[in-house]
Amino acid sequence: MSFSVDWQSVFVPGIGVAEVIIRGSIMYLCMFAILRFVGRRQAGHFGPADLLVIVMIADAAQNGLGKDYSSVTEGVVLVLTIVGWEYLLDWLSFRFPSIRPLLKPTALKLIQNGRLEKKNLRKEMLSEDELKSQLRELEIESYDEVRLCTLEGDGRLSVLKKRSNP
Image 1 (tube, rainbow, N blue to C red):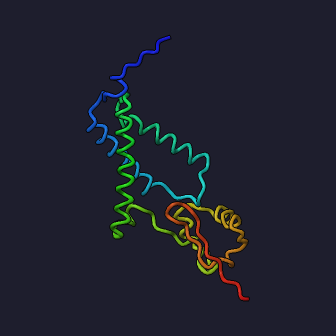
Image 2 (tube, rainbow, N blue to C red):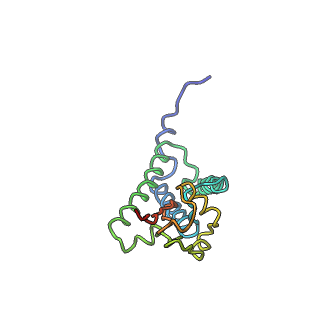
Image 3 (cartoon, one colour):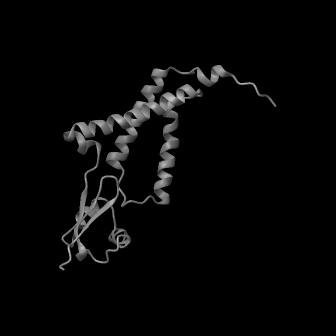
C-alpha cells in the first residue's frame, strides 16, 4: 500500500488551460442551444426517460469537454468556464431584454378563461391528462375554474383561478 502523491499530476495541467476553456465554452454553448431550442419543456416533472437523456448527454459530452484531462486544475478551470457561461447568459438576459427570448423560453398559454389552447399543448407535446394531473395537484378540478394557466419557461405551471363571487 502506497501513500505517496504525485502532486505535479494533481495540480499541473496536462493540456493547456486555454484549451480547457475553449472546449468547455464550445460544449456548453452547443448543449445550451440543443436543450434550449430542441429540448421540450415538461410541466414541472422529470421522468425516468428525462433523467436518462441527461445522463447520456453528460456522458457523451465528457470527452468533448476536456479531452483526457486529469489534474484538479483542469477540472476547476472547466467547472469555472461552465459556471461563467451560465452567469454571463443570465446577466445578458437580465441586462438586455430584447435578447431574452433567445436565451429563456417564454411562457406559453395553456388555458385562458376556461378554454383549453390545444395548439399550445400539441406544440409542447403535453397531453391533456398530464395537464389535468398538474391542475389536480393545485386543487383545480375543471378548466372552468381557471382564468389563466401558463407553462413557464422553466417548466413550472402557473395558474390564476377565476375569482368566485362573494
